[in-house]
Length: 252
Image 1 (cartoon, rainbow, N blue to C red):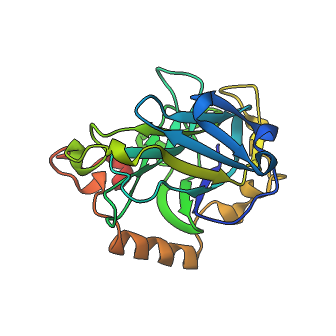
Image 2 (image 1 turned 135 degrees about the vertical axis):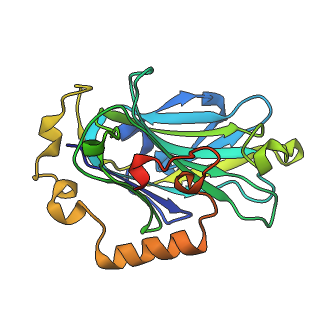
């Protein structure tokens, strides 16, 4: 079994835990700025580089969250990503939030992805500002793989103008660089583990996120989830018959 809940709070308030307690800079160290004694971090992206950071530890279960302020104005082609990723490469597990930038005044697109090569018994849920926007159900009984590997928390700001905005037709406007993304809220609610594949201790009900009331969406959460899907979602791979002539089992 595995319980992973991810939460993204966009442009929220302050935080009380310093970055260095749980995180390290992963790349682009000269494009990272620490403020408020490390409780506020800015990543910068210009033509030369973007930047990224990752948790020091891997987690077998937990409730993972950050407060984020996305790049403003003309951010077409710029990707701000918050994700969980296992150490293994060929058969890795990964849960993604990717904010795809856009021209000034146009809406930012939030893209979610799940990569899985494992088994489990519970659904994965993605939240933005306390609203569930994606639910990845556990359907291993019908052959759908499900994330079970321990994962690190990773964040990055990078140039994706080959595909991110209008299918790559709208390119990054480098006259607006450097692009800046702000991050706060570095406290981690997770069960740290050094074992990549066997994290049974992380499924204990002693952890609040493993308790049964968190296994599925509640009635009000379900209502919010349906509202978001009906009002804001414009692409769902479950409905894409060109790519999937046969409905994927996970969508049934």
